[in-house]
Amino acid sequence: MLKNYHLDIIILLSGILPLSSRGPGRGVLNAETRVRIPVAALKFNMLSHNLNIKIFLQELVSFALIGIIALFSVSRMIKFNIVSSQAVLIPWWQFLLAFGIGTAIVLGLIRILHGGLFLRLFFIFAIFTGTITTLQIFISQTQALIAALLLITLYLVHPYVWLHNLMLILTLPGIAAVFGVSLNPYTAAIFLVAMSVYDYVAVYKTKHMVKMAKAMIAGRAIFAMIFPEHLRGFKTHLNEAHPGEGFMMLGTGDFVFPVVMAASAFSLSPAAAWTVFGFSLLGLLLMHLIFVFQKVRRPMPALPPLAAFAILGFAVSVLLGF
Image (tube, rainbow, N blue to C red; front, side, top):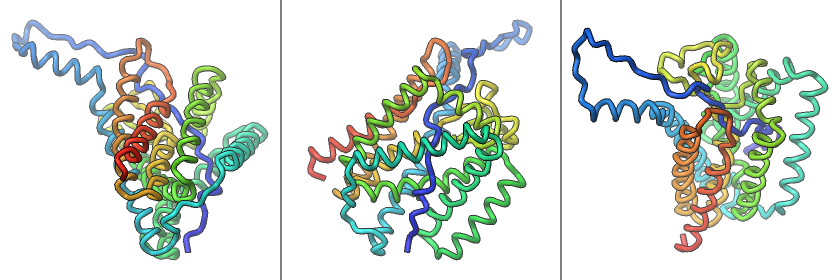
């Protein structure tokens, strides 16, 4: 029977931290080389650099893996009667209240205990239980527990960027799937709107999300996917991976919440769920374009465009009768 480990996990970080605060670099052509580069090729290279296509492909692959694993998890949960194909009708205000209280408790503990060790322990606990949640949908609980212990041990010994991202790719689908099947899609839509407003206020108004992100990075409790500018950056130790220094970070909430919307749409049909997920990918593209075309690279709330397209995908699936 699937245990509700997700109830112990609060997704804290939702936002995007910049690859660089300096704007695009300028290439230098040495006249002594006498190498002629076609203007079209130069324009393409400059466009590719400005759009950070390498970073977007990493975002796309990560988002796709998390979403696909989550939706296949939901289908297996329904197939093997782990959950009903009909969503549990949790009132939206109860869900938001519970989420708010849980988040407030965690943030209070962070302040009281001055972050550091507590953040680190909380992060390890979150990815451990999240990994079990995902794996036990496909294998036995015992096998999932053993696999999670081995992966956590490896992560603690070798905390590199590639392993950090792998752990989150294993952690987030199970959380999204279990949250998603616990909600009807209308409740999930209200939740996404509320979290989008919170994301905007936390990044641009109170700015506490940015401060929280810095504290988490300092404590090596990074609730975010890390995308390096160059592939060799995946071999970087977490202590050396900082946004603005060749790395960009995208909060785990920005991956989880749209996928929760897609998972909840399974209560209508699998087609509706995949439609929501497909629209979420378009939201990811819009989010990336908004970020790279900022006049000044700075942290931004990434969830609003993702949530908007996820909800739009749900509306389309309802209108088309999926």
